Image 1 (tube, one colour):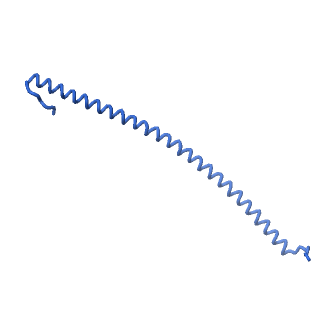
Image 2 (image 1 turned 180 degrees about the horizontal axis):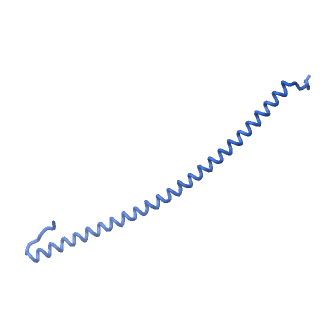
Length: 103
């Protein structure tokens, strides 16, 4: 037969279980709030990284375009230098009657 009498021992056991469950739930809620804050910080950091990567991509694209312009300018200057050397050699050959090499 079931005994409906409540003893001090039973009340203390039930009370301690309720306190433990309450503290556990409170701890989980606090932990979840900290977790949400950390996720927000990670999201903000990822957004910053994304912006930094976009800026770096823009810089690298501009650098590549500038390198291409410099390469084209160098080829143009080399071509101009060769033509100038040819003209100098022709001019010197006309004046002196013999070809000179550019120094």
